[in-house]
Image (cartoon, rainbow, N blue to C red; front, side, top):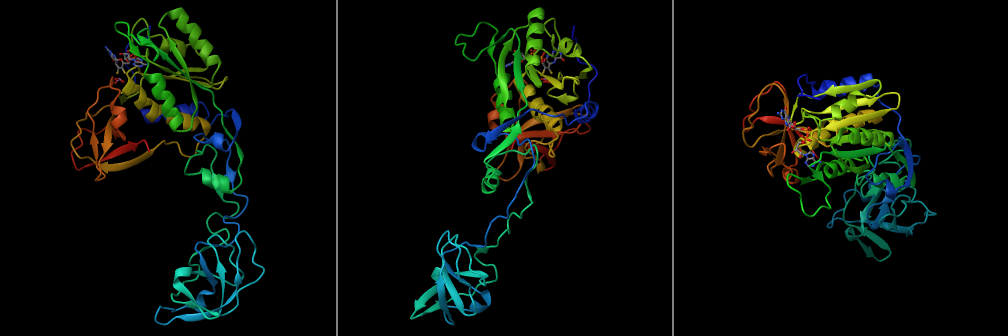
Amino acid sequence: MAGFVKEVTSRRSALEDISKRLLFPWEYPVRELQLGEAVGKRSACEIINDMPYPPFCRSLRDGYAVRHGDAAGATPGTPLFLTKRGEVLMGQDPDFGISSSEAALIPTGGILPEGADAVVMLEDTELAGGWIEVRRGVQAGENIIFKGEEIPQGERLLAAGGMVDFQTIGMLATAGVSRLPVIGLKISILSTGDEIVPVEMKELPPGCLRDVNGWNLKALLSRYGFEAEYRGIANDDGAEFERRFHEELAGCDLLILSGGSSVGVRDHCSEMLASLPEPGLLVRGLNIVPGKPTLIAADAAAKKLVVSLPGHPLSCLTVAFTVLLPLLLRRIGSENAVCGTRTRLPLSRDLAARTGPEEFVPCVLGADGSVAPVAAKSGYISVLAKASGLICVPEDRETIRAGEDAEVWLWQ
Ligand SMILES: Nc1nc2c(c(=O)[nH]1)N[C@H]1C(S)=C(S)[C@@H](COP(=O)(O)OP(=O)(O)OC[C@H]3O[C@@H](n4cnc5c(N)ncnc54)[C@H](O)[C@@H]3O)O[C@H]1N2
Ligand code: MOO
């Protein structure tokens, strides 16, 4: 039988020791997807820009392409006069160049003619007889982007494990990446507990609650680029749980359980995890609050991981964010083993803490850049909807006073 957790491991050393012991990174299955389907997923390979961006020197304004020296010092009171050399048409390579004292009409996005190095905006010019009157001087490079200026050829657009999202997909599109391999790890989520019922159940039987953790975990993983399958709820019956555990593990690379990890006749998780082949159970309790009854196990030969999270929803989500995701990022060999942003921000009110465990406290980011800890119990659920992230209070810290900087792990 499981029993209370007595020996606990620090979160940091658990992550490091497991990564070393299991010789992370491990290979992962790969799925080839269309660019649009890859949104919110992680690239399985490094993506290199194979052509300079932009591919030609282009104008950022409607105006006249000029040599900047020819327009130097022009003002409305002391305009300069240039001759019109020609007109650049959108999507066409100009078949002429600009010589001294010449200008060419150019649309926003047009290819800059040879010899020109700046664009005077249309509103800073006037047609005066056969001349173009320039009423404002320009610097070299003004209102244009040079060929390869932003993304040189050969530059890395995305690291292996990097996310395809609103920040990166534009680069991939411009580089013509219409399909790409994404990390296709099979992740299954199984909630446990006889008192946990499916979301579809309208009338709750006494003592029962609808499954929260399964959905929280699925959404959290998806937010950070990992697709996970919600596999429902396993009941606490020993033999049936054992059957279900092995069935689920056979079908995935990472099995995430929640509930049933602390103590009691129904707490079969630690027994199941300990029964795995080499190395089996690696962590049986973490020195974090909330989240102490966390179990981590692996079957190295089969390259399978099992993480059993505490049942209380806030504890479950906290460990998923602070331990499970960093572990997963190490498993895939991501350069950045952090989800969201870790920073230091001043507290807007005192945060009572005790030395010993590492504590994670939900917090709300204020408009003034400070954070306020939110009082929450490990069984709370709605606090997540308000929180911007978690304050991390290290093992050796006691109460942090208002105005003092605290370590904050923001979701974003
Ligand atoms: N006497 C002690 N009691 C407890 C200890 C302890 O050291 N001594 N540890 C506490 C801590 S800390 C936690 S966290 C919980 C974790 O227990 P389990 O991981 O075994 O989880 P359960 O007992 O199955 O569930 C705890 C709680 O959460 C509810 N739950 C479980 N799964 C879900 C779900 N999918 N969705 C929504 N809610 C869920 C469950 O009904 C329980 O109320 O143990 C403390 N107890
Ligand atoms: O870990 Mo329990 O998660 O402290 O509530």
